[in-house]
Image 1 (cartoon, rainbow, N blue to C red):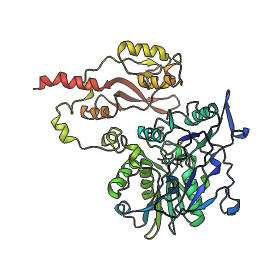
Image 2 (image 1 turned 60 degrees about the vertical axis):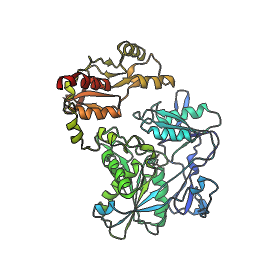
Image 3 (image 1 turned 180 degrees about the horizontal axis):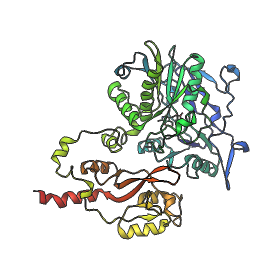
Length: 491
Ligand SMILES: Cc1ncc(COP(=O)(O)O)c(C=O)c1O
């Protein structure tokens, strides 16, 4: 999800191959008290309130809040790129469906939007989103504000609350949250973030093909799906960008969904890589999630020869060059096993274990230590990152100089606050038995790796919890020192 803040009114358009549907209800009325939450002095609009959109299935088109425009005829030179909206191609997937022995047709709808209206634009996005996205948006002239991914939607630091804070501070600004047509479509498979895409597309498709099944895709760890029990997965973090939230967005119409499926990062990214390699479709990760689930749903619903399954592909490879496109990133995250046997044979140290390293003495911060004290201690000891633990020594997260700097310079924390307010939770982890060959690949992706030990803790009520103790932190220099120090002895 991205939040756009524009300094002049704008309409956001989305559409199918034949017409363009304009969602006027993306611009919310901030004067409506029923839609306004207060955090002390400032107002923000709860993103999960019922929609006020008056669209209903079968509505008389003259009364519909959305209007359709005729597709622009394909002239050789378009007046600007916005004329391409609503002209998304539908492309047949040739090899992947067959490799699963499925006879039905799979088609991919490619969506493309661009901002050329020249509005002053601030994009608020979480730090789960890639730097490629940030840089592209900046190149398009937008100002990008980043927030933490692992906070709940109603936390003051969530994208929604930060966007509303900016909206109130910037005079004359408006806030918008994000909100094809072959003859017959039997199933449409689409990932859901805000649910705007799946809502808009399936309304139109069900109108034209009433029996069409609508399959919603969200990652394990997000809560959009119904029935609610399917959301209890024990997973609270996923790498997938664009899909799944911890609230039900206003724009999203649950009733349209025939069935929800949950996607895993591993299957989704592997499928995105297959779409690229086998079909030549240079897609993003959520397209892989939708395609992977399309195969599973087509099987479950027994889709037959001649039936059409349309899979929605929202974005391109461009934003993921340092993520799922990279073999090293995929391996570090545990999504593929690279066959490194040959190169590891050549590297004498690759089969040694983390425990062989000569690690520095570990320091940790208790969660109540202030950011100022933490910075002084890190400065005096030459550490760039230190683990933060609770009373029992369980690992809560990391505090890093980079993260403190970025939060502090943006005025999001005061140095008198405890380090628990600035925890960084998603970092590479390994154990004392991890091979140094693999550790070096984790260090290709991140500056440090936390060496941890998991244990089971039984509670008085019989619950079993997995707790993580921190053993040490390994950085690139620890590995380099080991290789340099030991190598002469091996000669
Ligand atoms: C890459 C990607 N895929 C899927 C989606 C989901 O779209 P929607 O928010 O309309 O559900 C988004 C939304 O930002 C996205 O960025």
